[in-house]
Image (cartoon, rainbow, N blue to C red; front, side, top):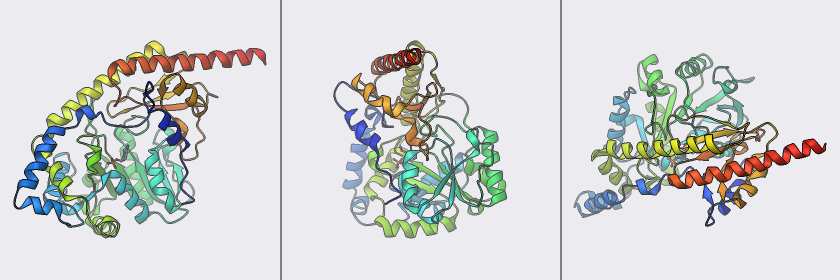
Length: 396
Ligand code: PMP
């Protein structure tokens, strides 16, 4: 437990739920997009079915529901990463995949290569195993970044990263795989957001590229995590790992030891929904988040003081703001909350917490008028902070 840091941000963001505060904090899907009615219908149909009803309420195999695994394998195959149900383990969200892979692959003190910043939840999942995070690729993914010894693995979120919303360029994908090949380390590709692209053209995943290189998923060094959390519902807790069969065999043992099996009812309901047309559901989410991203970009242009910059994510739920050097977004957060707006300070996503002038904004949850108002409030807080800093400089 010594490796796990208490999160002061978690405490601060609890206040962000207070009435009147517009929160760009959590990476939380918009509940108006949940397929609540079709889920209710699917669950009722499953429970009323003489075969599936008892199955849904019984213990089941640790690998996960065979039909759901076959569906996930078929989707992966259609997206250029051919595999079979034997290459798929159903997990309690992608998060459980991170936990298992951390335990499987990290020996205390091992280097793990991560983007810088990276997903805080991954750092938390890996932490109990005592890894030593090393920056992958010096900010542009292209350096080798393997430090002074072998690495347990590289961990990346190539499509619409959390926290930055960035997409990993194709050249960087190939470069990472080449480096991984040379130094013989596995690559964890975490992909909960990939389906939520609202502009640009999708790049082949690391898994697809590696299978094309080595010829078969069972020889691939990439382990890909997926999830229904951002496309159906995070409350279902249904995610998956796609990997070589030798890896899946080990993960199945971990799954069995950990929680025996993912809830079958949730797996069957997810399967019923996706068989009934996942495309329409994804299109709705893409359209909604795309419009919210546009609203946030346009509000930022109008309300941010000089010296603040941000990116234009092509998908996902997040946008990354960089403030002038010397700004401390952790220290600013209480002022922002007082002004009625919340965000996550960027330092939380850097393994050594040394970058203080960035922050993450999530546009998935608030409605468009709230996005406009929240960014206006944030602009005022940052503007005042600038003014105060200028004043201090004039004093000194
Ligand atoms: N990976 C990343 C990059 C995420 O942003 C999240 C959710 N915030 C997860 C994994 C975990 O997702 P799940 O709900 O599937 O466990």
